Amino acid sequence: MNKLFDSEKYARAASEAVEKAGVVCRAVQSRLDEVRAIAKDDKSPVTVADFASQAVVVRVLRELLGDVRVVGEEGSAFLRDPDHAAHLGATLNAVRIVWEGCDEAALLDAIDGGDAEPHADGFWTLDPIDGTKGFLRGGQYAVSLAYISGGSPVVGALCCPNLSRDFGRSFDDPDPHGSLYVAARREGVRVQSAMGGDTEPVSMRRPGREEGAPIRACESVESAHSDQSASSRVLEIAGGAGEPARLDSQCKYAVVARGQADAYLRLPTKKGYVERIWDHAAGALVAVEAGCVVTDIDGNLLDFGQGKGLEKNRGVVCADPGVHSRLIGAIADIGSLRG
Ligand code: AMP
Ligand code: MG
Image 1 (tube, rainbow, N blue to C red):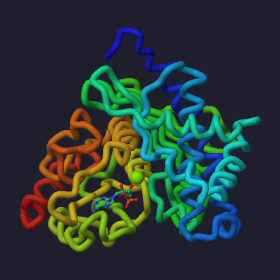
Image 2: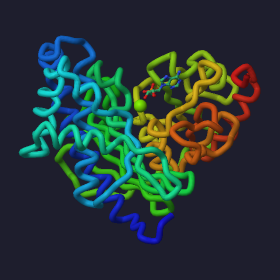
Image 3: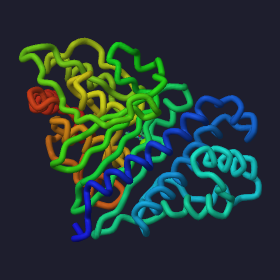
């Protein structure tokens, strides 16, 4: 890690970046039909929010930290195509909610600021909207930003605009304030509202779980992203508490980090799929700093030093330290996941 690295400064910048991006995403999500109509296509709301979110994150990081290296999911080619002028206009409108006076050139330049490659000296990785399907359903999604150095995330910020801090609320019932998590390695994790309300961050630790209690798990809504029948078998062996809760995005890491579930299982559905770093970096750091254990399905730590993919890992198991090894054992028992 370079000597100038200041985790507090980076954490503050990351927090502000995802908070502002969250405001923009929420505005687009609240006008799904309108945005669909402007650009005359069904996927356009996520397209617009994806580009707007990436632009806002890059803009805030540049403002607060100067020249930054950001490995983001998006590039500007789509918006530069004259056939997509309606998307460009809608994206500009969305960005201007938090970035007054932004024009087309500044917008496109900020989006392009996210096209860096991973670098040994450290880099940011960004998923401007993680959980696309959840976003389109009006459900859970996250803006996920992490700084990676030496093969591990060292700062992570996760904005979950619809994830309530109230455990009694269903994941399908979006919360007016949402939640935002900021973690720095070996310095813990703080939580605050994503959107107004009590914005003072407070430190967060996973509460201890009662020994012998059944394991409450969560997993992807999408059966293509995680093998749901395998997770049922794993939980049967390890002592699960019925069907896992299903929700989109890295909100799952936050749910385990704060003790609303004991485990997040992501069991590979097909050979050869390599998890993307931006789908895990921020969430995994939040979970670890809250006191969880995060590994792949073989029990190996996630290696973020292999480029844009977790090339050395398969799947993810994020869990309370008291149940993690039991889950890894159960996965080994059903063996068919390895291949
Ligand atoms: P989730 O919301 O947890 O289902 O995860 C969404 C992420 O899953 C997306 O950002 C994709 O990058 C990723 N994804 C796409 N295909 C797969 C797959 N076959 N296995 C696991 N993850 C996938
Ligand atoms: Mg994603």
